[in-house]
Image (cartoon, rainbow, N blue to C red; front, side, top):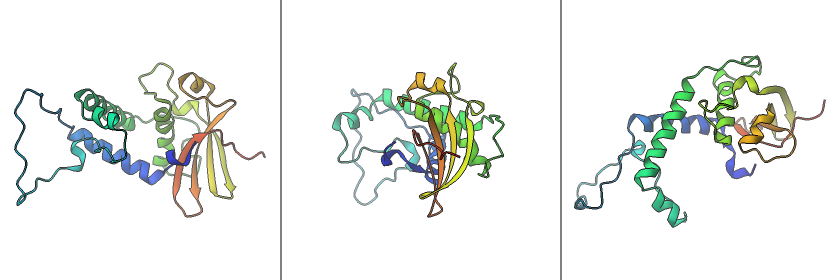
Length: 192
């Protein structure tokens, strides 16, 4: 996985909390084109826009077509649906033999199957979605870039987007700076 897709676990949890807040105030669809445009707010009293009211605005260097698509009612509906799915799945307490056995916090452990499903584009509603019980905890290992906790992703994940040859692993790395990072791919546990 490229470094661009690695998220510190704390950032992933904060993002999940922000996404959950988005569900409480879903973005509104833009008005139909036939309606008259609203007057611009006056310079004396700028209107505040809540952070959770809509998907993030497009960055200046972002693809203009993508930025345009992000403003469509279809995208906004898909965005709300995905946020509702993430919130619902965060409430499910999956069971697996390795839960409580890794030395990580309960939240860190329970985030792993959700992370794998998110990366594979799966939902718990899917017939063959990867679940906590499908992940095989391989152990934690001291490595040059920190302590790494590995889970083997089941082979059935390959049917849902894993293009690596051989086994794939998800892992949480506690960096030498003390920050937790979650990733997946073909990084493998050291040989015993």
